[in-house]
Image 1 (tube, rainbow, N blue to C red):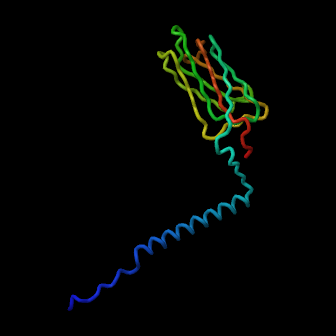
Image 2 (cartoon, rainbow, N blue to C red):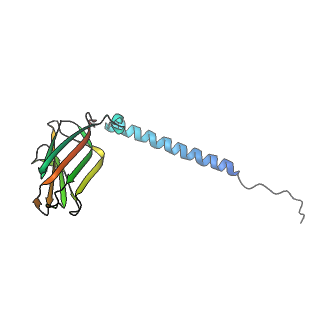
Image 3 (tube, helix red, strand yellow):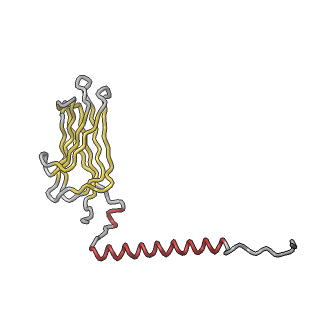
Length: 172
Protein backbone atom coordinates (compact mmCIF):
# COMPACT_ATOMS: atom_id res chain seq x y z
CA UNK A 1 0.00 0.00 0.00
CA UNK A 2 1.19 3.36 -0.83
CA UNK A 3 1.05 6.26 1.61
CA UNK A 4 0.70 8.74 -1.22
CA UNK A 5 -3.03 8.43 -1.48
CA UNK A 6 -5.02 11.54 -0.83
CA UNK A 7 -7.30 11.45 2.18
CA UNK A 8 -10.96 11.86 1.48
CA UNK A 9 -12.73 14.64 3.39
CA UNK A 10 -15.21 13.47 6.03
CA UNK A 11 -18.83 13.11 4.98
CA UNK A 12 -20.25 16.62 4.96
CA UNK A 13 -18.68 19.83 6.09
CA UNK A 14 -19.24 20.70 9.81
CA UNK A 15 -20.09 24.34 8.96
CA UNK A 16 -22.86 23.27 6.64
CA UNK A 17 -24.25 20.91 9.32
CA UNK A 18 -24.47 23.81 11.78
CA UNK A 19 -26.21 25.99 9.18
CA UNK A 20 -28.74 23.24 8.42
CA UNK A 21 -29.44 22.73 12.13
CA UNK A 22 -29.92 26.48 12.65
CA UNK A 23 -32.27 26.66 9.65
CA UNK A 24 -34.35 23.76 11.00
CA UNK A 25 -34.62 25.38 14.45
CA UNK A 26 -35.60 28.73 12.89
CA UNK A 27 -38.34 27.09 10.83
CA UNK A 28 -39.64 25.24 13.91
CA UNK A 29 -39.83 28.51 15.88
CA UNK A 30 -41.59 30.25 13.00
CA UNK A 31 -44.16 27.45 12.73
CA UNK A 32 -44.77 27.49 16.51
CA UNK A 33 -45.30 31.27 16.46
CA UNK A 34 -47.69 30.98 13.52
CA UNK A 35 -49.72 28.24 15.26
CA UNK A 36 -49.87 30.33 18.46
CA UNK A 37 -51.13 33.40 16.56
CA UNK A 38 -53.79 31.37 14.76
CA UNK A 39 -54.95 29.77 18.03
CA UNK A 40 -55.11 33.11 19.82
CA UNK A 41 -57.18 34.70 17.02
CA UNK A 42 -59.41 31.64 16.65
CA UNK A 43 -60.26 31.43 20.35
CA UNK A 44 -60.64 35.16 20.89
CA UNK A 45 -57.91 35.65 23.48
CA UNK A 46 -56.77 39.23 23.84
CA UNK A 47 -53.56 40.65 25.15
CA UNK A 48 -53.16 44.06 26.69
CA UNK A 49 -49.50 44.85 26.34
CA UNK A 50 -49.78 48.23 28.02
CA UNK A 51 -50.48 46.50 31.36
CA UNK A 52 -47.51 44.20 31.03
CA UNK A 53 -45.25 47.24 31.01
CA UNK A 54 -44.89 49.78 33.77
CA UNK A 55 -48.01 51.71 34.62
CA UNK A 56 -48.26 55.19 36.10
CA UNK A 57 -48.49 54.23 39.77
CA UNK A 58 -50.57 55.91 42.44
CA UNK A 59 -50.25 55.21 46.17
CA UNK A 60 -52.54 55.72 49.13
CA UNK A 61 -51.51 55.51 52.78
CA UNK A 62 -53.44 55.22 56.02
CA UNK A 63 -51.92 55.70 59.48
CA UNK A 64 -53.32 55.23 62.98
CA UNK A 65 -51.77 55.78 66.41
CA UNK A 66 -52.65 53.75 69.52
CA UNK A 67 -54.78 51.34 67.51
CA UNK A 68 -54.90 47.64 66.63
CA UNK A 69 -56.37 48.23 63.17
CA UNK A 70 -56.00 50.68 60.30
CA UNK A 71 -58.29 50.84 57.25
CA UNK A 72 -57.59 52.24 53.79
CA UNK A 73 -60.32 52.76 51.17
CA UNK A 74 -59.40 52.26 47.51
CA UNK A 75 -61.23 53.51 44.41
CA UNK A 76 -62.98 51.01 42.14
CA UNK A 77 -61.36 49.35 39.15
CA UNK A 78 -57.71 49.81 40.16
CA UNK A 79 -55.00 47.15 39.96
CA UNK A 80 -52.99 46.73 43.18
CA UNK A 81 -49.30 46.05 42.53
CA UNK A 82 -47.62 46.55 45.92
CA UNK A 83 -48.60 46.46 49.59
CA UNK A 84 -46.49 47.80 52.46
CA UNK A 85 -47.37 47.61 56.16
CA UNK A 86 -45.46 48.80 59.22
CA UNK A 87 -46.08 48.50 62.96
CA UNK A 88 -44.33 50.28 65.84
CA UNK A 89 -45.17 48.52 69.09
CA UNK A 90 -45.38 49.82 72.62
CA UNK A 91 -42.66 48.12 74.75
CA UNK A 92 -45.34 47.07 77.26
CA UNK A 93 -47.63 45.56 74.58
CA UNK A 94 -45.74 42.99 72.49
CA UNK A 95 -47.10 42.21 69.02
CA UNK A 96 -46.30 38.90 67.33
CA UNK A 97 -48.33 38.99 64.11
CA UNK A 98 -50.00 41.14 61.51
CA UNK A 99 -52.89 40.48 59.15
CA UNK A 100 -53.74 42.22 55.89
CA UNK A 101 -57.03 41.71 54.11
CA UNK A 102 -58.53 43.31 51.01
CA UNK A 103 -62.15 43.12 49.97
CA UNK A 104 -65.21 45.00 48.80
CA UNK A 105 -65.93 45.62 52.50
CA UNK A 106 -64.36 44.64 55.81
CA UNK A 107 -66.55 41.49 55.84
CA UNK A 108 -66.08 40.53 52.16
CA UNK A 109 -62.44 39.49 51.77
CA UNK A 110 -60.81 38.38 48.49
CA UNK A 111 -57.17 38.71 49.58
CA UNK A 112 -55.76 37.85 53.02
CA UNK A 113 -52.26 37.37 54.38
CA UNK A 114 -50.96 36.82 57.92
CA UNK A 115 -47.32 37.40 58.75
CA UNK A 116 -45.23 36.92 61.88
CA UNK A 117 -43.48 39.69 63.79
CA UNK A 118 -40.76 39.27 66.37
CA UNK A 119 -42.40 40.42 69.64
CA UNK A 120 -38.97 41.51 70.97
CA UNK A 121 -38.44 43.92 68.04
CA UNK A 122 -40.05 47.33 68.35
CA UNK A 123 -40.73 47.59 64.59
CA UNK A 124 -42.18 45.05 62.20
CA UNK A 125 -42.96 45.37 58.53
CA UNK A 126 -44.38 43.53 55.58
CA UNK A 127 -44.10 44.23 51.87
CA UNK A 128 -45.11 42.38 48.76
CA UNK A 129 -45.04 42.98 45.03
CA UNK A 130 -47.82 41.20 43.20
CA UNK A 131 -46.75 39.50 39.96
CA UNK A 132 -50.15 40.27 38.42
CA UNK A 133 -52.17 43.28 39.58
CA UNK A 134 -54.96 42.44 42.02
CA UNK A 135 -58.04 44.08 40.48
CA UNK A 136 -60.37 45.89 42.85
CA UNK A 137 -64.01 45.64 41.80
CA UNK A 138 -65.89 48.64 40.39
CA UNK A 139 -67.46 49.32 43.81
CA UNK A 140 -64.02 49.99 45.33
CA UNK A 141 -62.23 48.16 48.08
CA UNK A 142 -61.04 48.27 51.65
CA UNK A 143 -57.58 47.31 52.90
CA UNK A 144 -57.52 46.35 56.58
CA UNK A 145 -54.26 45.93 58.54
CA UNK A 146 -54.59 44.49 62.05
CA UNK A 147 -51.99 43.42 64.63
CA UNK A 148 -52.22 40.98 67.50
CA UNK A 149 -50.42 39.14 70.27
CA UNK A 150 -51.53 35.55 69.95
CA UNK A 151 -55.20 35.73 69.03
CA UNK A 152 -55.86 39.00 70.87
CA UNK A 153 -55.84 42.28 68.93
CA UNK A 154 -53.21 44.55 70.51
CA UNK A 155 -52.81 48.30 70.25
CA UNK A 156 -49.66 49.54 68.55
CA UNK A 157 -48.01 52.93 68.89
CA UNK A 158 -48.26 53.38 65.12
CA UNK A 159 -49.84 51.33 62.34
CA UNK A 160 -49.35 52.27 58.71
CA UNK A 161 -50.39 50.65 55.43
CA UNK A 162 -49.52 51.82 51.91
CA UNK A 163 -50.97 50.41 48.71
CA UNK A 164 -49.49 51.11 45.27
CA UNK A 165 -51.82 50.60 42.33
CA UNK A 166 -52.38 51.24 38.64
CA UNK A 167 -55.39 53.53 38.28
CA UNK A 168 -56.55 51.99 34.97
CA UNK A 169 -55.58 48.30 34.67
CA UNK A 170 -56.37 46.17 31.64
CA UNK A 171 -59.70 44.47 31.33
CA UNK A 172 -58.51 41.10 30.02
